[in-house]
View 1: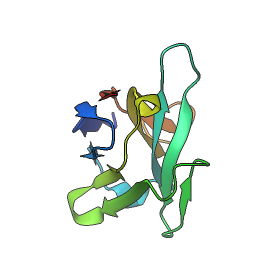
View 2: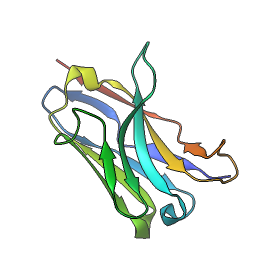
View 3: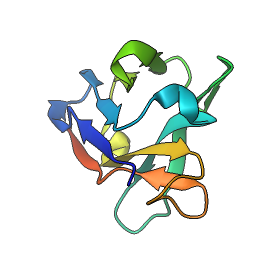
View 4: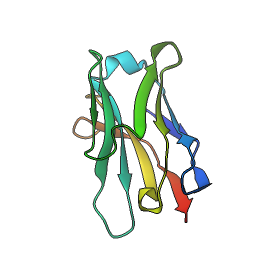
Length: 120
C-alpha cells in the first residue's frame, strides 16, 4: 500500500514559519499531483496547495504569497513552506497524492496528518 508520511508540524507563534514534509513510499512522479490539505476543528477539509506532475501549482485563495509548495522528486518528498502564519492557519495538515494505487480510494492517497498550531 502507498504510504504518505508527514512531518514538521508543531507550535509556532503568529508571524512565524514552518516547513512541513511529506515523503511517499513510491515515486511522487507516479502521482498525477501531490498536495496539501488542512482541516480545522468543526470545518471541512480544504485545499492548501497542490503541485501537478507537469509542474503547475495551485493555491487556495488567500494563501498564495504566504505558502509555497515545492517537490524533490529524488527524495519523493513534497514540502509546503508556510510563512507569516496566523492563528486561523491552525489545523491538521494532510498530505495528498492523486493516483490509483493500493490504499488510495478512489484516487486519493492520504497521510495521517500533522498538527500545526499557531498561537497569538
